[in-house]
Image (cartoon, rainbow, N blue to C red; front, side, top):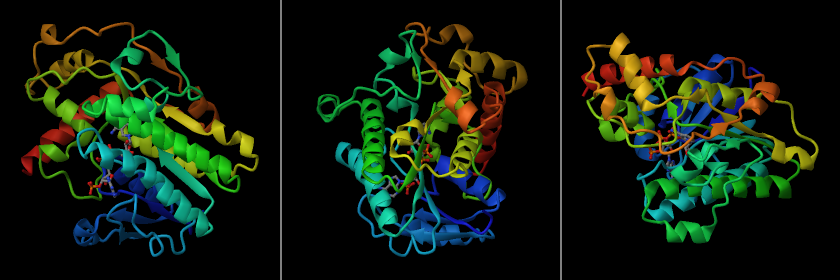
Length: 335
Ligand code: NDP
């Protein structure tokens, strides 16, 4: 295992940074993709067993050089809500996944871990999260391309739609290529500190999903969102565990390697209540100003990750919230 070279896409990203860190810690060698303008800066970090390759657009770039000598691919890169146009979001998510898979499969690579989202199992709206249902990793959001056109002005709808349609495309590819072994990781909303080996975000617009806790520690309530929470370090752990799973030989079992990863349900009001006690110096809004949940919260069943990945304990949401608050205070002092 230790001599294996893993290609990770989008290593300037929040989650991929931790995936790289944990792969290195587990003894893998890593090649990370980043846009060419960022590669020079990354190379300055000079981390042992980590190299970089320029990929400007996962949807269209040529991966020939990037894939040389690679044993497995972890495909993480995809735009978050509001980061790209409708066309670019859909294209990067769907064509980006397929471009990586196709080129890697042609290069003889058989092992893939792809980052999907909890939004792939429930409908791309707040309604499903507050319907009192239980979602498992056998469920699929019913989103279609027509739904995307009808809801194109809503960046969150668009984002979740891009994730479900991309993951469906990945599983179609896996069915057509029974020689490949794919696992998809479906995290809840991801928060936590930034990976230590990569440059920190240089302004608020680069905070990613940590912009929610950033709002929280700066006197406002984050916007209403499904109250699922998982620590970025646990999301990275799931990717590494999935990479270490044995190969799938029967094509019919490919649909059984989706893994919902979530620590639990935790509202911003609970986070605020806790931070007021443990970090009284932070500017947290009064608790009565947090909106009530619009309905009974649907649950995410993470038992497959527990049983198949042997995931073990999650970092508890209180730890995540304190660690992200501390990290954001530290990061903001560098601005
Ligand atoms: P980030 O925005 O931090 O990282 C996204 C990464 O993708 C960046 O490195 C970005 O590069 C890269 N990227 C985007 N578009 C392209 C493109 N066209 N070509 C090449 N690279 C591109 O997001 P996260 O780390 O939070 O998310 C990573 C993955 O996890 C995504 O697939 C996301 O959908 C998924 N996910 C995230 C959750 C969360 O709560 N954060 C929850 C569930 C799933 P650049 O910075 O140069 O644009």
